[in-house]
Length: 466
Ligand code: 5GP
Ligand code: MG
Image 1 (cartoon, rainbow, N blue to C red):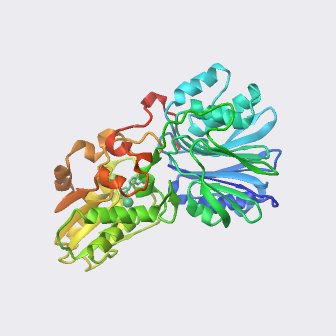
Image 2: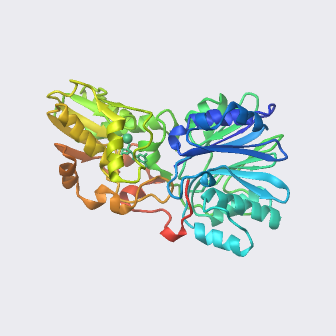
Image 3: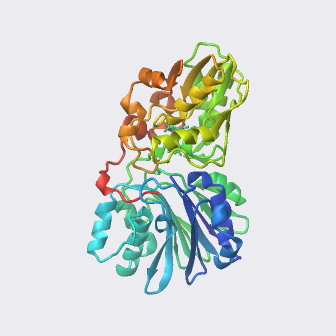
């Protein structure tokens, strides 16, 4: 998971302020920690902090982070310890000082293989962070083998397999690049003044007042220099990446991205609406109300309700300040977290037949609690509808699905899950119907639902994703 941002200002020394704004808009992509690195063209200043960007980066910090170019990161640790050492941006010191920094979002599947090769060549690593591997790879081939940085990035794209949307600073140059499969989103844009911005999600770019905005193509490298911006496509140059196919993460559209973002050629809210309408087509019955599990299922439930002509209403209220319940280490604390996070409206559910909609079931913690809660406050029937197929496989490309053994759809069939959760009926979206909710369905990765991994990996190969 995680989110990245970059800004190159043509006239002012305060790119970090823009990066902070972009990171606020992407705080949902990671709340564990965050950081910003700014370059004044000669050296890089960095500031990292645990928790939210708003609390972690102060006005004083911003004054110190002066420079025309800056990159930033919000972290959602999928693996690895949660401390500042794992927080990006990652600054690489060389004999010339701190002149390189990188931030990336994704998960590398051949980490050990590539890190091993670099270690043999004398490169040292201070963490197992994927971002550090990408950065050290580029710096090694640039400084020690004399490659242009853009060529080193192309080589990286051939050698390093997995998901990475990344931004890299080298002195006064900014590089923006994305793996050839296009697993994770990445958008760039230009303002009226010629400033260049990049962010994981387009909702962050909206705040940058860009005049034109588009997704970075899979396998593309965008180079921003003090005087110009140029684009190297996957086909340019001597080092040709070998990119078979696009594999965008469909789970971004279902759950992770903000509904006001567009990515992979889709409006996120629109896909969620379509998912809801598809789910509605499965049902013949009448019900009194359609209620989402907020916020992630709001648009799915709206799509369901409007397709069926059943009233949509918010019967569950979410506390936005509880923090993440999903990643809590033990089941008891996850259960308690769900109670703290959601509360039902009084007298709302009395004697109602409720279509309860969530985007996904992972371990089953959230929905089991909620079905019980809604029944305890009077719901007569609870029909549970899920806006994704059963999650049966872990993600190797940056989404935080826990180990296979804890995925409920791996342990039980749909009827058993329904009984365990205590719902009156349960339906999931089928993979075929999910594919019909996007324009180019063959360009997506559905591995968490069907186990068809576009890139194999072994557990030993992984570094610490972000
Ligand atoms: P469960 O409680 O079944 O383990 O998780 C399902 C709930 O968590 C759903 O409400 C869904 O919106 C949310 N969810 C699904 N995947 C993720 C994830 O990777 N991270 C977080 N924080 N929540 C998730
Ligand atoms: Mg949710």
